[in-house]
Length: 197
Image 1 (cartoon, helix red, strand yellow):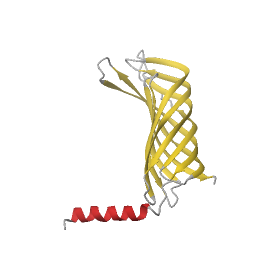
Image 2: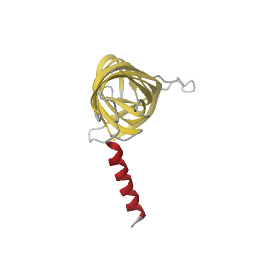
Image 3: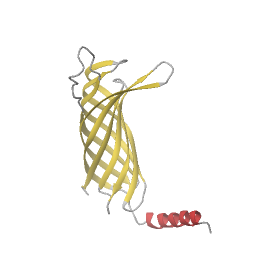
Image 4: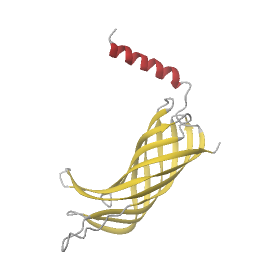
């Protein structure tokens, strides 16, 4: 038997056998606390649909709390509240030139859903949803001059791994897209679930 085919077969059997005994996330309610680092960047969409990326970014802390409604072991609904606070350092070497920057200082409110693979100890997940951001947004690039304190729509998206015996620890990468401000925030974060049931 081909070694690659044999290994694939063994992985499939192992996954099927243990997936019935494992729960990738706990059914019931829990609270998740997340902390991480956020980086805000700009994008500009031209008339013909091509995208020009501008190399200006802001960085700062990210905090998020979620109330988890575990419907099934592989599906949950997650209302959330949190914040992204990014800034840029001023470059003293640039005199009489514009200081391009992208910053987000906003509170986040919204809801998302999660699909999680039922794999023991390490469960990959994907999330998506919709929310609103309340705060100050600044996107100053060669093509964009957006500087407002406002309430804006955002679209959250996340991928990551739930790890541990009960999958209480999480590590992941998230994105929050603000179409009105032509900016997005990328986040690297770690979290912990506190079961309530």
